[in-house]
Each structure stands twice: as structure tokens, then as C-alpha cells.
Length: 296
Image 1 (tube, rainbow, N blue to C red):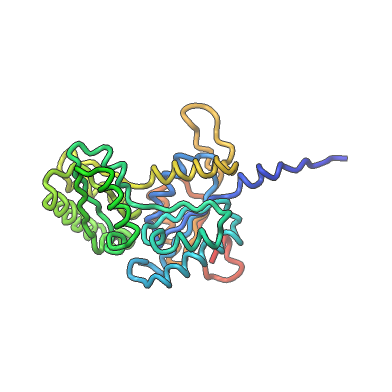
Image 2: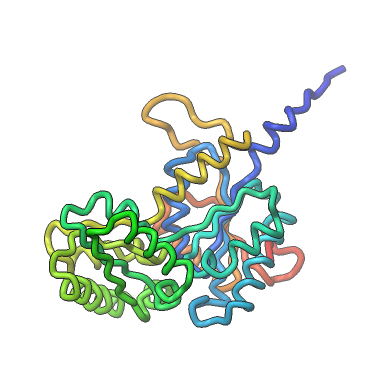
């Protein structure tokens, strides 16, 4: 007679996937950093492109979508943690999500002002972000804290209207034009600026164009590495970190990735293949109960 030994409950919990969502493809930049920092983890990525851009939506709508996606990922995918890989969604909804699900580790994103100020030799940094992010109370509070902590620093906000949408749609020519415009604006507004903060998760996907139009030596900093570190710390603190590959350098185990979306699944697949090194499955939301991997 053969017997099956059940895995410890803690191990079963630790091997559940991490949920990541964004209004579109911008969160792929966060997902990539998470995969690099947590090679033993499985991920479920949800792109809400069918309701994008969030920056043009009322707060109540954004909060409702974020809550709906979160609860679907919990219920249907069994996620053990959630990364809100969108600055607008973090600003509008993360406090509601944490109130509704206090036992779920939920990590958000915010512009990486502190790392930028720490590395800036001129103490002048420019923040490229959406109008919605820059005008939010959450960003204003962050900027005020950084101004107090770094009293001799200068933080310049550069609203980048249309850039996230151009990246989302894959309009290469428009992305190039807007990157040229906004890097020039940052340098003209603060002539001594030596560091640009990418304050939207879409912007790292246009890093090549941004660098092409930036002065030599200008540094770019985004939130992805900090989000990945925070996610690892939070999981480790509550005993939910999956077993990681042994050896050095770390070998990417890549236990699995699901891509889910409310929009064009083929566009999501193409972007994922371009920006990620690993792809195992793409599912579409709203194609009926039999759609594999359905989440919302």
C-alpha cells in the first residue's frame, strides 16, 4: 500500500502565487524586477487594459476596479500577496484594499524620490509622472517629507501627459517625441538636474528612448527594485517566501507565470514576450466560464 505524505501547511501557503496588477502593461516593469529578486516565486499578472487609462477615471471607479481585481485574484488564483504595480491605483485605492484584506501583504508603488536624492550629486532631481500622480495628496506628502529630509535639494515635477498612453498603445514615434519633450523640459526647468525619477510604471518600458534624448550622465531611477525588495521582506517576515533556488549566482527557477487581462490579450502577450524573459500562459478575462485562467 502506498501512502502520500501531505506537505506542511506553511509550505503550501508559501508556494501560492503573488498577484501583480496594473491598468495596462506598465506593471511589467515591476514584474520583471520581482522575477529577478524572487526567482522561486510564481506570479499572476493582471492587465486592466479594458478600463485604462486609470488617470482619466474617477477615484470611485478606480477603487472599485482595484477591489474587484484583488478579490478575484484571491478567490480564483489563491494569491498569497499582492503588488499594486500602478502609481494611480496605489494613490487611490491601496488604503481601501488593506482595510478590506488586512491579512494579505499588499505592496504599492510610489516615485523613488529618496533613492534619487541619495544618489544625486547636484541635489537636483526631476520627477517624470502623470498629472494624476503629481497632483495627488499622497505624492505631495511624499515630496514634502523629502524636502524636509533633504532641505538643500530641489525636486522638480514634470507632468508627462500622454506618455503612458503612447507606451501602452505601442506608438513608437509618439513615445520618442514625448520622451524628447519631457527630458528637455526637465533639464530646462532644473539646469543642474542629474537624476530623473520615473514616476509611472510605464516609463521604464521607454527607457531606451528617454536615454537617447537625455544628456550624457543623466541617471534614471524607478521604483521597481525597491518594490521587489519590499515584497521579499514582507513575504519573509510572515513566512510566505517560497523556497528559492540554491547556488550563486541565483538560477531562475521560474515556477510559473500567468498573464490575465480585461483587454486585448494578444497585445498583452506581445508586450510580455518583449519585456519578460519568461512566458507560460496568457488568459483572457470575460470569455466565459471556461476561459482558462479567468480572474475577473
